[in-house]
Length: 160
Image 1 (cartoon, rainbow, N blue to C red):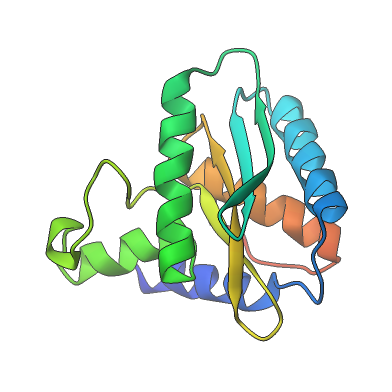
Image 2: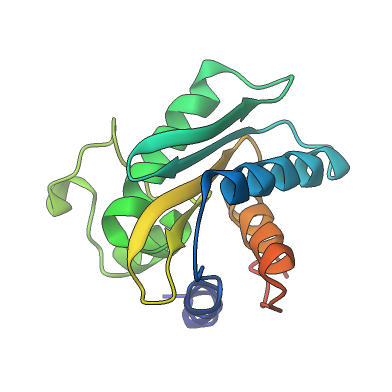
């Protein structure tokens, strides 16, 4: 198990929490994700869900329906586990547990990075922010970086 990487993910998840959330806040985060992806030269699909309801979605030029399907799988994983899809995947691979052994199917869940739970300061997960289109760790880190900037909190990066 990559304990250092898991520690970074745990730190991100413990810090990047909201005192309150609104549709306008999530829309602003979505627009910041779009701008960040453009600045990195990435083509991504962005999806933000609150209580299972899609409140923001954007497909950049160069993305396909496949990116939206990956986003759905990543978001399902983050919302179910209450941790980022990257964190969930790392922990379960280290334990030798497959999705199927966990009672989950690969059509609806994944162990790839790119979805971050929307968590309140209390630790309750109320939705997810998802990016699909770059490498797994890049999809994850773009979200963590934008949340860090929005919340004004410094965090470690998963990209070394």
